[in-house]
Image (tube, rainbow, N blue to C red; front, side):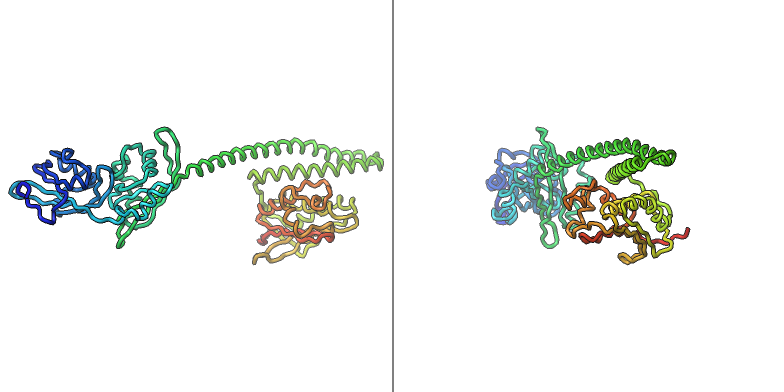
Length: 483
């Protein structure tokens, strides 16, 4: 019996006796349970004491209407325990009795539970939150360090998000946390940035995993991993890549500038040779004609190199713009072959053309197609010995179930070994390099051909046999267009 209220066996233990809202008595078991001495709570308001012990979300109205509630209590040493709080009013005296009885909780109390292993035996931050109010019940120091870095607080245990985070109510974070309670699914955040009071920047990956029982979320386990080193390393690499990209862009601009500067005098040289042959045709000796021919060959070779460098730079820089028009690919191919016929004849090589299609109108870029075919023909003539043939053939075929036009350039030259076929389409991959001799090739022509064919939605294949010759086949989808 305490001041007229009899304590039955049901209510023996930790209790608080309240008169006019103020605590007048507390049992020794209360001090043992909570760590707070009688002098620390004597004549204190019961609501204020329960806010300290049970958190701000604890409802006195719910307790007094139901007679008891289950809640999480934080001791003076910040340990979380689960208790049943009971309420018993005395009608005659107006006094109120509140008792607290500890409940067995295998998650909070068992030292062998996996949470304790996570808290103590890992280099990650771990926190345990209650449901549905998200009070922080337990956390290791690494998790508390994260909260301190992010929210600059002094104490986080026992607090709900609205006590830690400004403008929490109605925020996206509140909606995300509530979604865990509704669907019981795990939630992840990556690379959360924090800055400590000392100005140290850190990045964290965070996961929230609900613990369910009977389909209801009882707790939420949060795990944090410090990914600062990985993020800073990636950012450093991104900065280096950005610098490298700028350097490549500067290199491309420099190459384009130099190539344009070289192209002008080369064009003047070739034009001068043509004018010289027309104006002074009857005055040139055979010896002079021979030297003029050498000048022309070398000028064309250098002009081809300059054009290839320009085109490579444009392709790599993304500056290439297709200018597609409707053109008869058969007639266009025939005209291009005629421009190189004289060079093949001077080397003693027979250049032939045939087509099984009378007309094939495609939507293509004439200038780029000319670049592709001239590169293939130039290589075919270069690597074919005197007295042999280079054949160009056009025919219709089916590739991957689609009707295609195939332009085939076949030579009878040195050929390419099977294990080296892919190399020649790489930048600076040279046929002469494969055979240990140098013929003046830069190794960018076929790389450019492959890039341009791809830009024009085509494909290129190679068949070759060492010592017999090579056949390059270009395929373009055939869409019949009436001129």
